[in-house]
Image 1 (tube, rainbow, N blue to C red):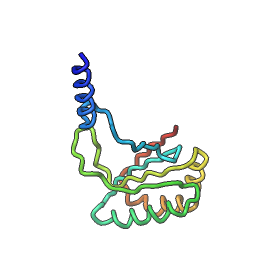
Image 2 (image 1 turned 90 degrees about the vertical axis):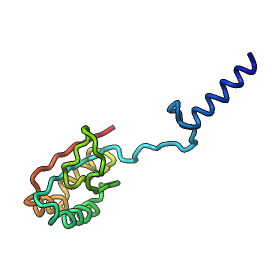
Image 3 (image 1 turned 60 degrees about the vertical axis):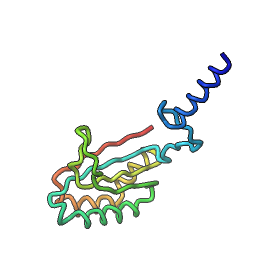
Image 4 (image 1 turned 90 degrees about the horizontal axis):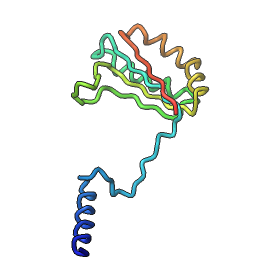
Length: 133
């Protein structure tokens, strides 16, 4: 009986170590994002081959000017090819704020208004998702 328990403990430890049981043996702790409010913007460009680099540069430039922005990520669709993934957009902008008030300041900031007015003629569509915790 004792040998059987020892065997089971070793076997479970081995499976867990290999990730077979879906249990992580890593001592690293995953930390949540520091931003409490995320503003996620998907932009479809009329002519991405021509305008992508310039719009991405303009996006980064304006986001850096807004003091309430705590974090941001500007990217393009990843090469994931699954039916559930929509990778038809040209640019994804994710902006993190402390709270709704920080987001609202961003919306009204002159740099944001200028960016929208100077680039909106290059878009075919924009979709926004806001998330808070």
